[in-house]
Image 1 (tube, rainbow, N blue to C red):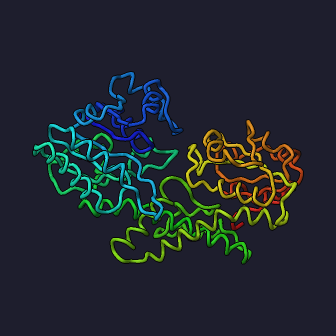
Image 2: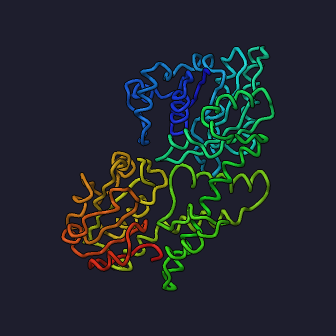
Image 3: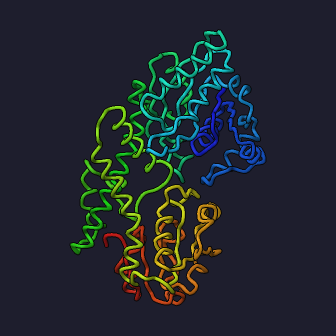
Length: 440
C-alpha cells in the first residue's frame, strides 16, 4: 500500500517506519526542513530503542521516504495518517491547529479517494472537524473527490514504541464507512497474524477510548502514589501492598508501582484535555481525574520534601547527585519530567545539583538553560563527586545494580533518596546507607 504520514514525531516516525518494515511504500511529511534533513542523512530527531536502525534499513530498501512537499505528500498515499502534535493550550484543551492545517492541506491537493486517519491523540469530535476542513477545501476547488475519515488512536509507550506497533495488543478503528474499514483491515493484517486484534467502533467512541486508556493508567499511578505516602506514615511497605492487591486478577500488577509522579507527553496532557472536554462539551466535572492530576502534581515534590526533612529547609552549601532526567527510562523526553520539579525545589532551597542521564542530558541542557547551580556529569559515578546524597529520579537499567561500596565512599553522607523504589531497603540499609524511598 502507498501511505502518507503527516508529522515525524514519536507517533508519526514510529508508525511510518513500522508500516514500511512490513513492505508498504511510505512517505513521511514534516514542515521542518531541518528534521527532514536529519532523517534523510540517517539520523533521527528522537531517542527510541531500535528505531534508527529500522529507519535506515527501510530508507535503503526504498520503502521509506521523507519530504517537506505538501502537494507530493497529498498525492502519494491512498491512506493518509495525521500524526501531528496536539499540545495543551493555556486552558488545558488540546490545540487542534496542526491537525486542522494537515486536513486542509490534504483537501487542497488530493485528486483521488483518500482514507484520512487521525493517529494523533485528539478530542472527541475531531473527525467531524477534519471532515469539514477537507470538504471546505474541496469545495473551494470546485471538486467532489470522495474521502473517508477514520479514528485510529495510537497506544505506543515511549521507550517501547517499535515493539508496541509491531506487536499490538489492540488496534482501535473508529469508522462509519465499510470501504475504509476494509483498507484498515488490509493495512494492519501483517501485525495480527495470530489472531484478530482489530476492534471496529464508531468514531467518537474510538476518540474517547484513547483518552480513557491514558486516564485510567494515570489514575492507577496516582492511586498507588497516595497509598505509598499513606504507607510511610502508617509503617507499612507499599511493595507488599502492591503484591497483595495485584494478585487479584480484577486489579492485576501492571501500573501499580509507586514513585515520584508521572510525566511525559501523554498522561499529563491527556488528563488535562479530558477534564477540559468534559467541562466544555458536556458540562461535567470529572472529579476522579481532577484528583488524579492534583495528586500527581503534589507527588513530583515528594522527593524535595524528603530531602528538606532530612537536611533542613535551608539547603545552602548542600550538593546533591541526581540520577535520571528523562520522564522515564529508554527515552530522552523531558516533557513534564519529575526531574524538572525536583531540581527546581533543590535549587530554590539553596542547594547545587550535578545530574546524569544516559540519553536526556542534551535535552535537559536546553530545558534548564537559565538555571544556575545545576551541572552535568559524564557518567553516574562522576555525578557523585562532593555530593551530600544521591537522588534517583528515573529508573534506567544501569542504575539498578550500582557498586554500593564506591557509592558509599564517594558520598559525603551515605544517604539515598530513591524516587523509583529501585533497591531492596533491607539490603541497602544493611550496607550502611540511609535509604529513603517512596512508601517503603
